[in-house]
Image (cartoon, rainbow, N blue to C red; front, side, top):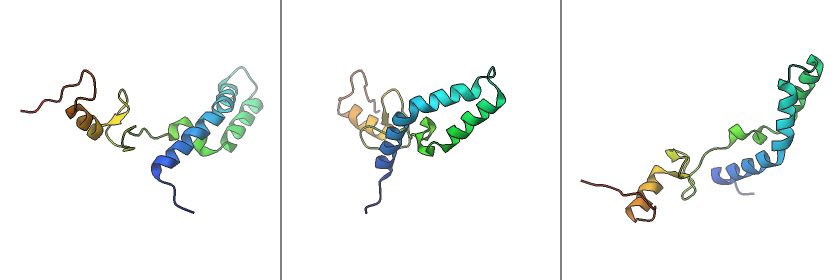
Length: 101
């Protein structure tokens, strides 16, 4: 079996997050509701801990949509600085002018 690339692994994490989002949110709501008894909240925390680790949204890595690069990521454009510079130089990003002097 071939080793998963980091990009493919990140896609699998995104799928898990989507799958468990509703269950995770409801368990968190129970666990953080101080009007409920301590046992009930503790039970919710235990159930939350039994969910797959990769189902937590915090584990998704921001990656460039163009290259898959994880570093120097611009959230607004969903791409890395290198892809931004390249596409900007080619004039493919509306409103972006790459200056050089």
